[in-house]
Structure formats: structure tokens, C-alpha cells
Image 1 (cartoon, one colour):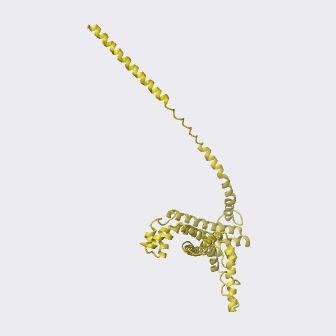
Image 2: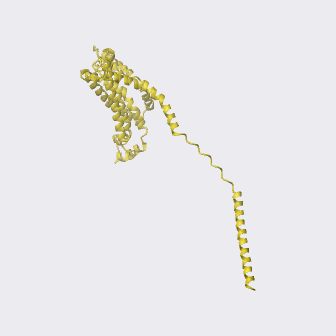
Image 3: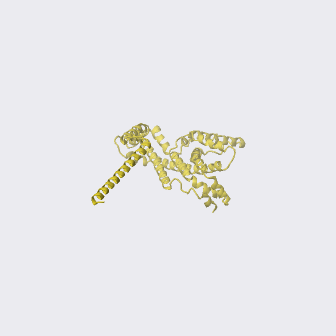
Length: 343
């Protein structure tokens, strides 16, 4: 075979290979297209909701807050602002701090401030001690009628303060049941009980009235105490008072502080109990406001005393919030009470 024929044959073989490769590629393309056509297309994703503009949401929230703010300003802030404004307005006109200087120089104001603080502190201590003792008995000592007594405490919170004072007058007043029984038995002209018109009578009435305000949060806290911790502490040999001190009280201390702060603020502003006991020598800040405004006609002086009373209440509330925020709402750990009690 000549060289010319050999070259022609090689060129024919290469052309045949190229045609075969092209045909294979075309076949693969057709197969892929068929598979793609047989595979179902995924469902189209639902369009995401378009977020509302932030400015529109902010405007709607501002509109909703306007009615309660307006009601608060009309019912509370406006009268309070009038009282503060009047306290800086002397009788001869103008605006100065002269009314405060005059009221602070009065012996009646200093005596009223002292009586108010002492009665509020005494009522708080008494209500805390009595409320803690009664709450421990109701929560941890089973006895018939315990649940009914706990429900009665909720009802007691709705009673007005003067109702408690009248009940004490019927019991321990100069012509009350106790003195009447004493005179019937002994034949004496009068009974031995005559203390309701003194600071001790006011203190007794306030402790009686404010004790449920301490018991209500304490009973709620005691209901959350883990009974397993109490059983574990008792099994480790801890005595009841040690269980109370190391297991129960750490859990209830925030509630005890809350109840005490509430009683202290209420005691600073109590008016009905002092008025209905008839203790003329016991003048508190609310009683002084009543005397200056309605009996003496000194509205500016009454506003000064009212502002002082408000400042005391707000300061005590701020102190309470500060202490609770620093303690984290619970001064003790929530675990390990049983171990501490029986260690």
C-alpha cells in the first residue's frame, strides 16, 4: 500500500471517531433532558410577608398609650401638682419656701412627724412578728379550718380600717365588753382597761389591721416551699425552729420584706384608725393635714404637711426597691436548705 492510501485511511478513521464521540455526547444530553423532564419541579416558595414599617408600629403604640396617660394625669398628677404648687404659695401671695419654714418651726409638726414614724415602725414590727407566727401555723400545722382561715384573710384585706377600730372599742373600750364583764363580776365603778385613747391603743389597732397584709404574701411564699427539703431536714435531725430558720425563712424573706414595706407605707398614711380611736393626744401627719385644712383653714400649711408625707412614702418605697434589686429578690439560695438545716 502506498503512503497516499495509508494517510487517506487514517483520516477516514479519525473522522469516524469524531462522529462517534459527537453522537455519544448528543445521547447523554438527550438522556439528561429526559430525566430532568421526568423529575417534578419543586413547589414555588410562598412569598414572605412584608414587615410593617417600624414608624407605623411606633405611632400606633403611642396612640394606645395616650388615653391611660391622660387619665393618670387628670386623676393623679394634676391634683398632686396643685398640692405642691399651693405649698409654695404663702397667704400674702407670691411663691416662696416661707410656708415650709413656718411649718417646720411649729412644735405640732415635729410632734406629728415623731408620732407618725414611731407608730408606723411599731405597727410594722408588730405586724411582721404576729403575721409570721400566724402564717407558720396556718401553712405548716394542720388543724381543722385552716383553709377557711386562709380564705378569711383574703376577705379581711377588704375591710375598712375604722371597722377594726370599732370592733376594738366594743371589746376593750371604757364601756366595752371586757370592762363590762369586770364591773359585773367585781362590782367596781369602772373597768381597768382604758388604753384605746392612748398611743398604745392606736398601735394595737394598727397591728390588728395590718397583720393580714403581711400574712397574704407569706402564705403564698410558704405554699412554694419544697416539702422534700423539710422532710430531709427533719430526717437529718434538725429541730423545728432550726428548720424554720434555715429552710423556710430564707425562701420567705422577700415576701416578708414586701409585706413589711407595705405596712410601713400604709402606717405613715393611716388616718381612719387614729380618728376613730379618739386619741386626741396622738396627732400624726394625716391628722395634722385634716386639722389644718378643715379646722384651722390653713390650706397652705396643710399642703406643706401633705407634701412631706408624700416625700416620706416615696422615699421608703424607693429604699425598698433598691434593697430588693440588690438582693435579687431572694437573699438565700434556692437549694441546699436541707443540708444547712441538718449539717
